[in-house]
Length: 457
Image (cartoon, rainbow, N blue to C red; front, side):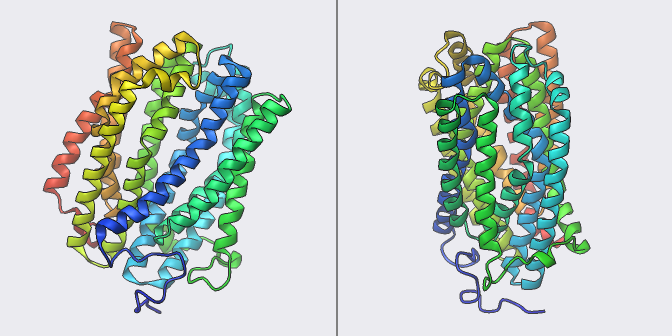
């Protein structure tokens, strides 16, 4: 088996060996392009929400923004498994095992193609059923069904882009996905403006714009991965399921997929309760989710850098270096999150008002923002330790924590308070409460467990 013995000279252009050099500057240099990538990815649906709200009104805005939790529920399992594949690729890349990296890449490509096709069929066929389960306002239902069905027709592109990005990031290259995403995000905005403002088409055209943009990003990613001469060139004839690699990807990715699905399911339950308060509450909740998505991007970026850094270094058995990276990523994420939370608390009304000037929407949005924003440090801590666990091959741990706390406890709390009070403000408090409980559990696990030897067990 060929090994990557010359660690500085044998990698393809763009890939990055994170087992050498200053760990702090390396993580920052990896996280910054990821941050910009995440910003532009958020622009996909945020551009839809902003332009739809301005052009088509509150009903259309509620249809688009309320779709976020359901979309995340349906794609989260596949995205979590892609994260597991990234851990496998990073581990073997850090260990210098070229053949294993290649087989892992081709296996996850096969997984992505099959997953995308399944998601297309399920999403298109069951859209009305899912929306009824979520107690979608009857006024919003026709446009929500329209938006969803067109969106899920592009499921293959959605899944394959995230698979390709996971592969490229796992090899230490966070810049190339950024370039592709900038192009596709700008394309999405141009198409939104053209379809909605120019042609005056309905809410379905916002979904079409997003799908076309996602397809463009997949084409760019695949053009790079298929290019001859790269160390890990993808070849169509090699795309298939390698049983041993599929087993590893499932081992490390399935818990992350389940974790994402659990969080998404809990959020769907929350969304369904919010929907019972009417379209103004729906629009406000969806708008808050868009703003929070942007606000939390720096933390997500550090978490992605942390997972890749830790996987590569534990693959190379550099345990102390992995610990340094973990401490730095957790501290940076917590401090950033709290600074962002304070800013959101102060400027909540202005931020919500960017999407919808309706006083009722702003009131609901500000109430939620000022309930949760100052507790973002707890959310960041939980996500950061979960990222460390995934990078160490311990994805089962965050899955159990999220299942117990962010799903069971959160849902039980919401059911209880809705029966006792029926006030929307108590729903918002479900988030800080469960973030705090999970943070205590993660803190104990991080200090007491031997997570650095996760791959050795």
